[in-house]
Every structure is written in C-alpha cells, then in structure tokens.
Amino acid sequence: MNEFVLESEEFRRELQNSPHEAGEVEFLRSVLRPGMHVIEAGANRGVTAVAIAREIGSEGRLYTFEPVPEFY
Image 1 (spheres, one colour):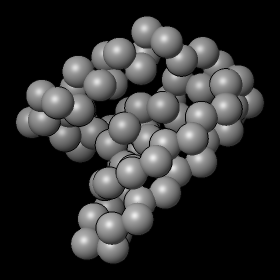
Image 2 (cartoon, rainbow, N blue to C red):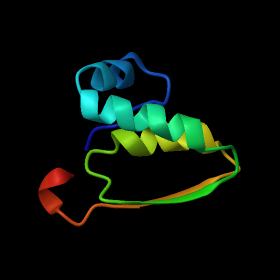
Image 3 (cartoon, rainbow, N blue to C red):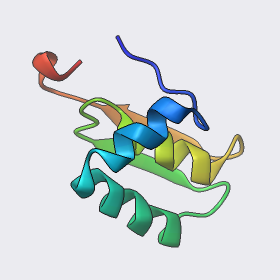
C-alpha cells in the first residue's frame, strides 16, 4: 500500500504526472469547504482522497471505497 502525506513532494509529483487527477483536484478545491462530509466511490489509488481530506480538514468526514482489488 502506498501512503501520501497531504503536503508531500510525492503527492505534488503525482498530480503533475496525472492531468486528469490534477483537473479533478482543482475542481474539488473550488467546491469543498472545511467540515464537509464526503463519500468517494471508486477511490482508486487515493490521490483524490488526499486532496479531499486536505480541503475538508479534521472537522470533515471522508468515506472512500474502491471495489476493484487490483487498484489497491
């Protein structure tokens, strides 16, 4: 299992190398607010989940699942 720290260089590189996820993260930053509750269906490797967690903060709640075992 890979781990990404919210402000890590590894996470920034991951976004730079994935234009689709970078656009998705940019959109999420525009609509998410601290304290929100979010469900992410199809979390894949978790890149988007990291961005969501960053935006909703410790007061928010994030529930993710990935139904395809090969992705985790």
